[in-house]
Amino acid sequence: MDIFHNSRLPFSKYFIELLFCNDSNTVKDELSNFGQELKILVTNKTFIDMGCGIPEISGNMNTISKLLEATNYIGIDNKIEKGYEVINTFTQCEYIESDLLNFVQNMDKSKGNIFFFSGIEPITLFQDDLLEKIKTEDYEEYKKDQITRAYIDNLLKEISLKSITGDIIIIGAGISGLNPDKYGYKKIIEKEINMTGYKQNSISIFIF
Image (cartoon, rainbow, N blue to C red; front, side, top):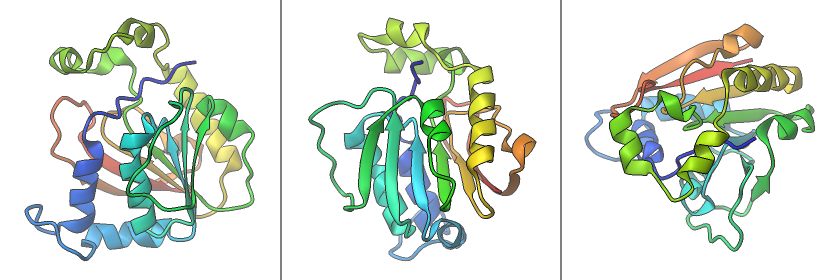
């Protein structure tokens, strides 16, 4: 099934501000308190971007995973553009064209993982004024294949079956109603993000 992932929306910009700004005004060279907390959780794990979208733009998340000292970055989406160019990235990076659920069902359980979700809401949950800004020529195709709550629940269940102690789920803006705590995960951090047009204006972190 198609995943609606609007990579053009600037979640990564706000994420970077959280990682590097203790005062939310000035980007500094060192990680913020939140960034340091997250780095401890991410270090030496595989960062899996669930519904990564356009590689040229999701390179931002790739770079963030490097800054947090993940061992590698994997971007998963059911449609990966061919001939893409990724900038500001590191070598331990790959993009895989796959349905998210199929990918998780076939993944290895033997190592630590970070599962990152952002921007895979069903279209109907976006505000109308925001939709007007993000319509594309294939918008009607997106609407036909929007993600469902049942699909998300099955995905979280499969993730829990493949998780080991210390694995992390990060839920960013543009996605709401996910309940990893139903499947053995526990929320440990929640930070507000000042983004308009979303029902979910925070980043939540869960640990297995």
